[in-house]
Length: 456
Image 1: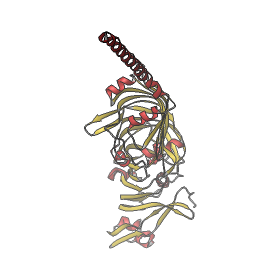
Image 2: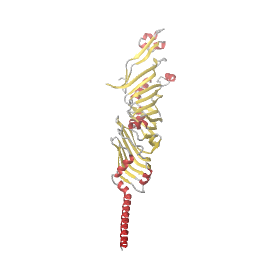
Image 3: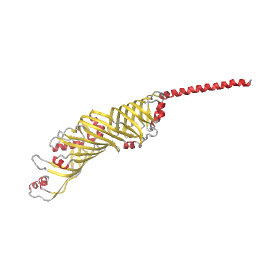
Image 4: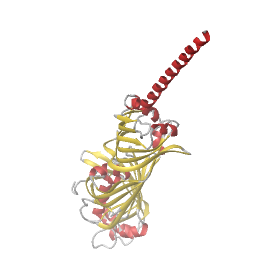
């Protein structure tokens, strides 16, 4: 009898455990099913996104999210901000091409991400001390639509870069050199109407000759052929290894500039041709400037400009680099203003250093030729002149101040020199039948006002 009574009790206990196990399984299944929805609708989603980013110096927040088992992951109103408040990205929406279980299964590869209307703002230097871990950060391809960017600097009141409405495709991938963010070739501007603001921003950084423009006319196009940025490095290391190459096309551009370098050239050209300085500097039609970032500086070559209202054949070629601190290292090839000297010796090389606002000039092997009407021989004809000059402030305004220079050093006196330059010292030398000896000539001080009328 006892065996018969124990069997139903044992069967009842087994049935109770099965019911409890079934209930637990159902509860667990419900938790698994609703877990993505719970995460998507609570602050857990921001914790999850910050874990995926693995960037200690950045903080992410979102407005809404969808984490379905079958549907792709989507995030709305994404905001990523640096802890030093010098970097910020705001995105309308981010959508993956797969649901979250597949994302975790393929981690760290997130596949293709669609990004709608991202807006990036940063101020250099960023000042963020932390770095992104390349082992934890994801890899992906991003199809970006209607992007905008604004880059400012502590050294300038105007943005260095400011554009919007750009579509592009970016990749975060591993390479032999580590993990990199690379952007496929894209176009920023296509025959955009040029404004002084454009000249003060990226165009002035690409070529400082275009900066400080009071009035401009013309159009320009700007495209990037290569853009790569290393991930997982400090800001200084990342800027040093940044790869950026592009082209700036200038279409029928003319500028009325406050640039002291161009003002000095315009003044010299006008004086040689005995006319008033031009109000505009015209860039050669459809000039193509190639630029690239290297070693923390932006290099450019191919800029040609001139003064066709005075001398259509005169073109100045510029190449060099400019830093984010507006430091200059530029070379100008300037045609000699005397046609005979230009044909004989070619252009003069002028090294420009200092800063955009206060450039310094170093010229080698210049020629000083002064001609008078109805006179075959030049009044002054001196070769091999080396000089340095810089821009400085004075009580009457900005001036170009020349350092002491030597024009002649024990040069042998001939009839041409006696009848030209030396007759200013002693008019009788110009009529002497025979002149012998040596002469030295130097200038201790020479200052030319910038932008002043001739009388001043």
